[in-house]
Length: 89
Image (cartoon, rainbow, N blue to C red; front, top):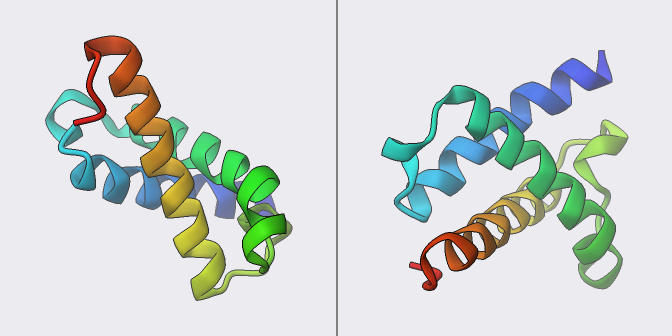
């Protein structure tokens, strides 16, 4: 059940991050899920120890864990845009 929750929340977070970074028209639902889950994992392992809170993969959902996961997804999209286009956009 935890895996399904991470996929659903990751998809929503990836979609919001793609709207923030203006890459929504270029991505489909699968890419939104991948960006959201990978961004959440990166944020959970890297940002959570510094900012506090629990990672989204632990199953405890809070506003801080969702915002940290969103930040991780936005940073991941910025890195992908820099590699692809040369600008974070």
